[in-house]
Picture (cartoon, rainbow, N blue to C red):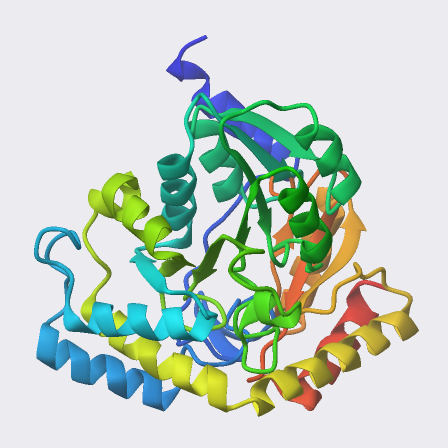
Length: 385
């Protein structure tokens, strides 16, 4: 085995309909986009509330860029922690009902940093089988005993918690699962954590902005407090419409991350202008509740339309509405057929999802209109039925 095998391995991937191609977006995130020189109606962005191209958010970014420049310049612990960063952290702490919040450059880095700062080989980590890759990588890299429980199954989790004598026990789950769109059974999972003296870490990347009256995500949706979700993770590049991520929790948790999270200590801070823009998007996210109301109406419209067409949807109440296809080649065929109809939706295939469960990951946004959803349903009827 040598590196000479790379070409043949890539060829096999193509034969299995698993090869991935990048597409070039030439316009802002919006329902109507231009990709590789052609205009499409897009249903594959995580900009769930339509804030990524909001004029107020853009103005805040531009104003802060004039004040702070473009780059963060250094890590937060050197001289890269600007007032814009600090103001956003304080606002996110208040928003989540936690004493403090800590910014990271990406959600992947927040997850890696948090788990590896808290655990080592003396500990145990328990993860949902369908967790995001960043959560799985975080658990594996920590050196802790790594176990996976059945998807969204508190009884499966309990059976594993009962058998460990680890120093620390950390249960890790997505809040909203990114490829299925379903919501974690956090109340049951949290109850098991309490019984076994474990902490619960929730990556609510796809819940913030979409769930809860003020967009507070799964914690607000289930009315869960800090002592029920000890480590709360949020990303800013989805419902918030900007970039970066944060961890929210106790004073002791945040100070531990500042001292030990390598992905925080050893990387340049996000551009201050992004932090300033996020403050504006946070204000819009909280105050403009009509965005969540509209999103819910579009979700209901889409699900009813797919039901009438006989399409198989996963059980999701969120903007993530996967259409189950099965085989990868068929998912690609439908995706290409939709492109011919002017609809842009990516085919999701293994290893992102389990073998035999390829799908079209439809994502809805408050920026979409009812007419655009009807256009999507008409195209699906022509191509996928």
